[in-house]
Length: 219
Image (tube, rainbow, N blue to C red; front, side, top):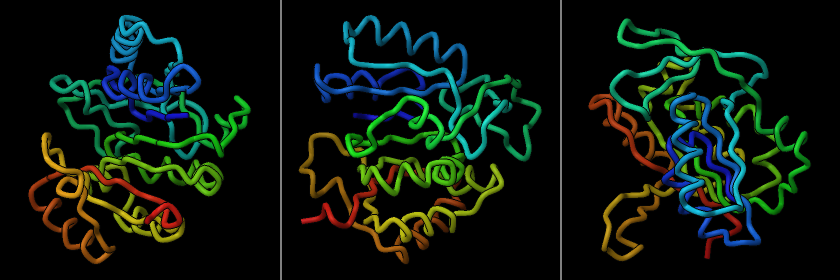
């Protein structure tokens, strides 16, 4: 089972549906209505059938939230930011937590193998709302790490560090360098390395992808 949190228009979900195969399942979450319409259209066009599309935001609470939508970037919508900014529109969206969702759907946590998270700074909220989920799945997590975005949602990079430490994950920097060997794309990081990298990302308003691998799955 593959979870795509912040599925946008479906690039990762389409790949995941092929990767998991006919016996697997993809759960793709996208709260923004126009993105969700494109996500639905793209998955249908892919002729896959092993997916479920959920028009909801994942967070650490259940109810209704406000999505600050970008007018320029379909992938830069922010849930309940502390500062909305004049250049953003607002859209009401439904919210739930990972723990609540998998409980309602009776999803077997041990079958979840991969979780991709790209939610513009709401990553710590998802971690808090999925404490049981992440404790029991032991899935590999691909997560976007944007320190300034996390701060803009009222959380701290230390929430991410604490999550990594608590659940015994080994972080890797997942570099997008197509055509090169895997060992040149994945760079192992310590928490100290990640903290040093965070300072650079803050200064440059940068973002990277992290791959979090459960320690017991390391060779």
